[in-house]
Length: 208
Image 1 (tube, helix red, strand yellow):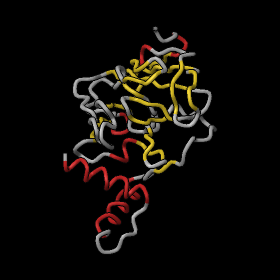
Image 2: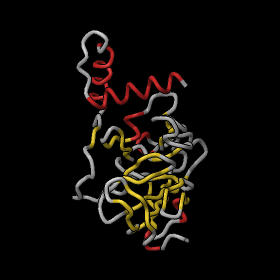
Image 3: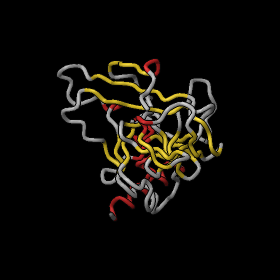
């Protein structure tokens, strides 16, 4: 089914914090996996916290890169997770989503950008791409749905409560501090939960 025209917008490269999936991402619906661009309001999706829930709206956005702007700004460049990047068969197939899009890991929501490890979780190759076609799913309230076998958040609206605690570095300085905590962990482990998750996924990526 086509996305309704009133749900479509076309914008220049947006500010930070736009959480979306790329066209072609498979979402688990009640009838099985469907490509996100084929979903429509009213269809039922299994969710982590609310059970089987209807789609309220499918949002589609076309992001334009300014002519000659190479590469895409870091915050607009999608992140690619290889199959089994998080755990065996999680995701079950490669998954591409925007840097701000959060995944549910160990009961916490973590933006894809904060999990980049240089092996199985990396910036998506956007060389030669001038327009990104992005989609997101809005439910009646924030929840976690299945995208390519990976638990990913639905759209979180302004002022809405998140369905799970959210972790993030919120800036380069905090990421540097995290790296320092991980570096000294063999002798003095003061790592925070996000440090531990990031370190675990880096080790997993190195072993693949």
